[in-house]
Length: 245
Image (cartoon, rainbow, N blue to C red; front, side, top):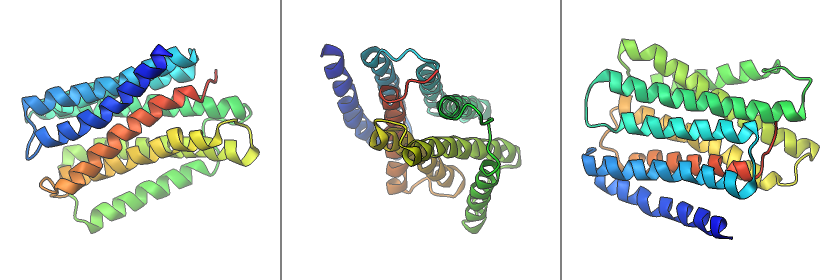
């Protein structure tokens, strides 16, 4: 019971500290906002650890999710440092990229546990992923979003990775629902499906903020940060419901 109460308190603390971070980081980041953001990030990682403790889920799925959460913490650290050095931004970007790769591997393990005969990609997955990325690119072109030339390839790679992550998450949830293979279908859609979608929304809004001239759009900043931390908490909570080897 103690650990369950602690988990609830950690999630509640996230709801309190995220608004504080939004307050201190506006109109621009500072060391106070840096400190609060790292607390927010530590909370979603702690939520993952507590989910493992409470559920007794020590499977590779849980470990992969924890690695994804840990790299999210690293990404938050470097992206919010008070510096304009591009290599610092690059480390943060690749930390998040690595986090999404761990999430992809976690969801793929869950898929493989249900459908061991399938490979990493089904025939329809690649066209779907490329279509979604193409739609994002079209939207960026319509909105006249411009990134410096040396950022184009890393950003494109990042977009491809996060869309793949979301596709894997949704495919797993839909497969479990279609075949009625899981006892917690609604919670799968909330923690895994919604968590992955919110991550895509967060990164899409971040792209508008960084490259679309929306740095001073405060509501967009709220959406970006709110969906990000909600996504991390939901993915951490998925450890309660998925225990696959």
